[in-house]
Image (tube, rainbow, N blue to C red; front, side):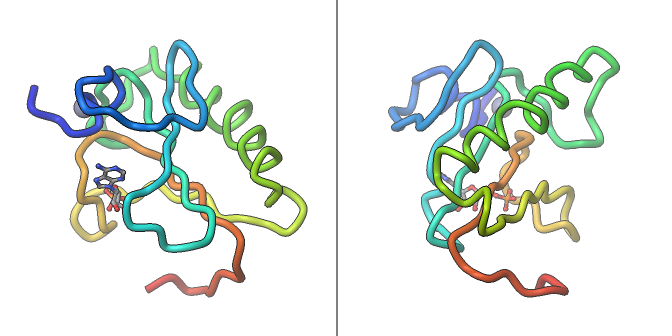
Length: 114
Ligand code: AMP
Ligand code: ZN
């Protein structure tokens, strides 16, 4: 499958992972929207939230329960605050069709988002 984030996750396209484990990789967004802008990407190709399967529950929980708080702490944005975003589909602003979690911090966020 010709998928950018599959290629990054499997090393076909070189990247500097700030975190990796058996199920996810995390790296800096190429076009950062905040001083800290990390993408957390499952190694498994999942197109979007819509494509989650029952077997993905542990993976989804792992990202939110383990990886996001760990990275927020490592990046020292856990106390100041941060935003976690999963853009989904065209109107959700998804441009890469391999599920990824944006972790944004280091500045004040606005609401509503644009
Ligand atoms: P989304 O619009 O939610 O699908 O997010 C895709 C994100 O991937 C955007 O924020 C892009 O800046 C980012 N991106 C695209 N290509 C790369 C790349 N080669 N390395 C890191 N981030 C990328
Ligand atoms: Zn993929």
